[in-house]
Every structure is written in structure tokens, then in C-alpha cells.
Image (cartoon, rainbow, N blue to C red):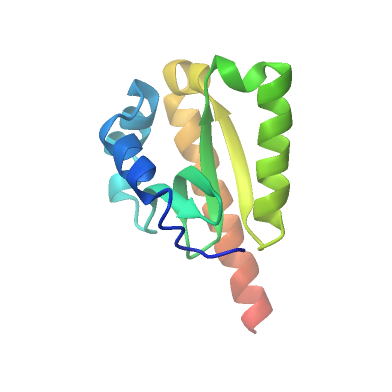
Length: 126
């Protein structure tokens, strides 16, 4: 990764923290903020700002609005995911509609992904 802390985009990340979408607010305040494994919001990772990041399991959670389903949005997301994969970071993408219609299922999916990553880390360390 270029530099984990890219000071050039930190002001943008701070602004995004203050201006979260309603889906980001819902996921943050009603689940991730108090989740036992620490997540951060609008985390700068190299040349990108991720919606939510868990350093312990190297997991990025991205919430996708309609712009992510356009041709250019899909291409940009693929490039971003490939970039983060180079550093062992897993990216999961969740459509905003799933936050609205299946919040408990989204939370369970994130929880299962974290648990799976923790279990893999335990196996590797043994």
C-alpha cells in the first residue's frame, strides 16, 4: 500500500464521517459502533477511503448506493477491491436496500464474516 495514512485525503475522510448516509448511520450507530471487534468509519487505506474497516481481521465493509451499480461504478469498485486485496484486505459490499430491508441479516453476515476471519487467524497461528 502506498502509505496507510494518506494525509492528502484525510480531510475528505473527516468530512465523510460528518456527512454519513442514513444507511451508514444506521449500520454504525445500531451495530458496528459497539461491536466487540473494533471497526472504524471512513478509514483511509492507501489511495482510498473505505466506509468501515476492521483492522483486526483486515475487513472492509462498503455500503453501495445506486451509483455503484452503473458501469463506471462497478468498474471503480472492482479496481478498489483488487487494490485492497493486494494487502490482504477482504472487501464485502452491501447494497443500501439490504440495510433498509434486512438489517438483522446484514448484521449477521458481517458478524459471520468477522468470526470466520478470526477463526482462520487462530488456525494459522497454531
